[in-house]
Picture 1 (cartoon, rainbow, N blue to C red):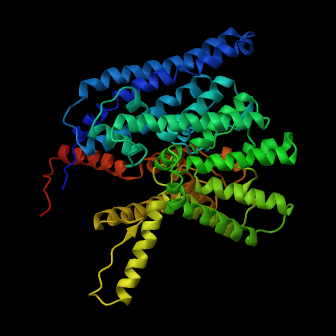
Picture 2 (cartoon, rainbow, N blue to C red):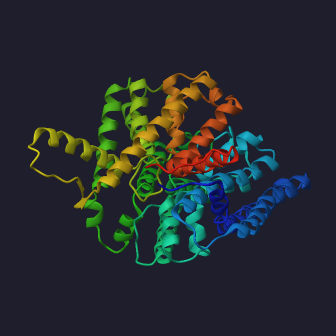
Picture 3 (tube, rainbow, N blue to C red):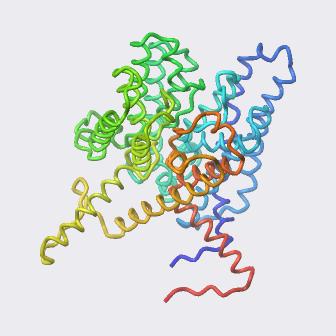
Length: 506
């Protein structure tokens, strides 16, 4: 058994330096839009300097943390230190990222932390009621942190600064998954970012051609590829239905559906597509399940739904929201509070599953869901068939070890347990029904961003409920285990402080 100690947290903190260094540069990028919009601030130059300071201060804080963390850096770090470091990063960076919202007076400190956590974890829930009224530097910042958060600020730091080798690969695996595109870790990371950039540019160009402003097109491509879901308008994607003809808004939604699916598809699949190997996509079991689930759930919801709009609009809304849920994006074209309870329950199911393993989406991932189904099938056949017949659990010719199956089942159970507990807490803190609370909790934990309650109830939530959802985003982004390791390390500190002997189990 691995013993966790309080100093493991310090060793973990020693690993966050390079990430903070990258964050220091990232926080300066929105200043470009501060200068581009200088006319907006001319009546009150004080506001112009306020926006400059809003991005300079978090940059300085990040750089200061980089310097401090170097004192705790070690060469002999273990996997537990990496998991702790990743856990600290995903809490620390959103905390620093809340400063621009606070300094500019956009949001209160609690709501600013929520907005930042929602951005970095690519959740897409927002506390900003009218994003279209915000300056472009703040809007760009919101979109940028989701785009970076899609692959992870850790992966960006690895691409720029961090070392080659097994440690780097462990960091990369904690962000994107264990699939290697190339033999070298650095080349794998660089290839991932190259694919990400190409798709982002392609999505931006298509949205511009379809009538979006270049700024809106860029930010929606940021948040579609990252499966984040932030929009520059309070109506989300529904805004374009109000300003464009039906065919034009439909094409925009179709492009976003395609790029949501691209974002929820493994980088290994994309890498093979770019090499001309399309068989990888067609033979991939997760990709098949993704489309089967989109089709089946859309069909069931269509059957369950009352006809409140035209058949075309209804089918359009259902397919868009089903895709948004399973890819964990969170774009919306209509209010979900009008949907039936069975329909919302089906969306919860999709949010729990999530996208393909090794993609930017959240949830437990389709690969794990398929593994659970295969395990159930294995147990049934084991009961039905003679014990002399030995069968293995296979997914695409790969035999799963018992340790892998055990890890998947534990994660799936922990995920549901945390979500159930979170639903009880949220229901107790708000006036939401238990189903609405569960929907919001799964939406937060799976980093989706869809909301099933009226906007007036959403924006009037008390701070305790807002913090609860923000922490669930953090837990979901880390896939629980790093959070438990951090808690166990803190708990071991309390044991040591009370001088209670720690004994290894026999």
